[in-house]
Amino acid sequence: MSMDENGNVYGKRYREASAREGAEGVRRAVGLMSGTSVDGIDAAAIEIREGEGGRPQIRLLAFENTPYPADVRAEIFALFEPSAATVDRVGRLNVLLGELYAEAALSAIRQAGLKPEEIAVVGSHGQTIYHAPQPFSSHGYDLRYTVQIGEGAVIAARTGIPCVSDFRVADMAWGGQGAPLVPFTEYLLYGESDRTLLLQNIGGIGNVTVLPAACSPEEVYAFDTGPGNMLIDGVVSRLFPGMSMDVGGAIAKEGRVDEELLGRLQEEPYYAQPLPKSTGRELFGTAYVDKLLAYGEERGLSASDLAATVTRLTAWSIGDGYRRFIRPKHAADAMIVGGGGSYNPTLIGMLKEELEPMGVEVLTQEDIGLSSDAKEAVAFALLADYAVAGRPNSLPGVTGAKRAAVLGKISY
Image (cartoon, rainbow, N blue to C red; front, side, top):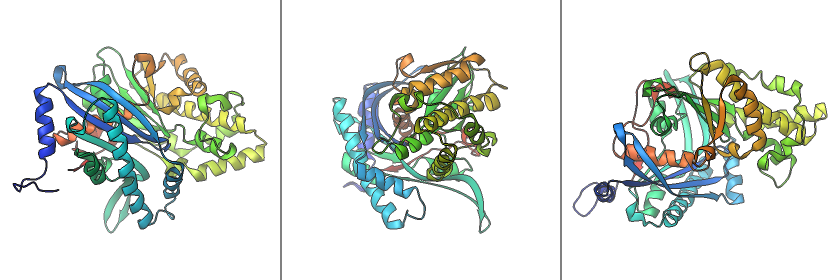
């Protein structure tokens, strides 16, 4: 940390913003998110007010998505292969992404009609390049680790705003999976007294948060359901040069689900793995797509058939997670879907076929007047607000950690 002219730790910038905004009855924060699909940087500027029972009330002031430059996106994908993720490449891209995140934060602040000095804190999830939540023994220790890049110190320096980053490691230090982290904010913002809700995110990976009716924080649970858009994007990008995703599910809509391939994919052991659990590109990445394409060629499947089959797999994995881990304890009233997958009508249609026969209404964030795109960026703004106040911002019942912790490292 830097020191001011009086020798005080340079938290002065945050203290002044907090005092001013506290006097107005609100605090303002910016959240930054870049997910496993590596589509770009989501930046949300929000206003936070204290509501009843200490639960925050959030107002979205501005939201922007800034796509990664094509060459930067290619560099990020290269780092997903550990043998290519050399120290020099990781270090350089860590700083470069810090610069890009800072620009995204400042742009969202301008769009909100605000100045940086009116923002109390920036929360940045960073870009995950490796996540190893399962403990392994080394030198007598059970180790878990995770790597997110996008240097928080650079974001703080360029914006002049304190930045909270590297959220996952504190949870893992206490024996947790380091994910999912958004359920903490979903409990605060979405819980209802008379309905059991499922908050399903479909990014690169799918994850669900279970909010039983009138639940306490200890009763919330969540887990990664499996691949979200990752296999869909992987298949489409390989078979359709120049495309990175199945826009609107148009390709899958023209295809036919191959039941034999689907059956093989459903045998993946991850789906039956007990809770808590999380997954990522380490399992459902390039090598997985290679096997899919090889099998498709062997079976003579068209590109649209492969897209249809992996789209059905994503919907099935979400339904399987509900049947296996949720319905026996809490029959849900509705599932609210966010993330990029919520804009894929083919996928949403398949998800309705999975869940609505079991009495679960499937809605999107837009159906309830919110934004699927902004949801996770908003979450990291709120997580950062808790972190700078020294308030625990995790749910150990979700991640498997031994205790709640204050997640995030603060750069001034």
